[in-house]
Image (cartoon, rainbow, N blue to C red; front, side, top):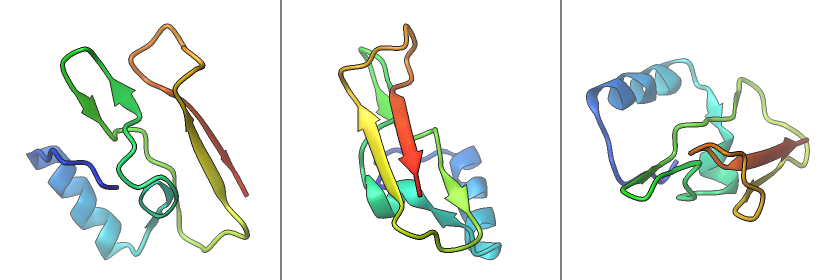
Length: 78
């Protein structure tokens, strides 16, 4: 995904995704762009996944559409 921080839970998820050959679209389409943001930290915790290749996928993480949440608005289409 391009996230700079890791933790034991994230490592477990990462291994599971690799074992199951699951595609994480964040990594392919918006590498390194955080989906969660506070005044102290940012992270990529909202993942978009599939088990098959999608036709013309598009993903966008919006910075100008607040949700009244620490999570960003995300659009994913295919």
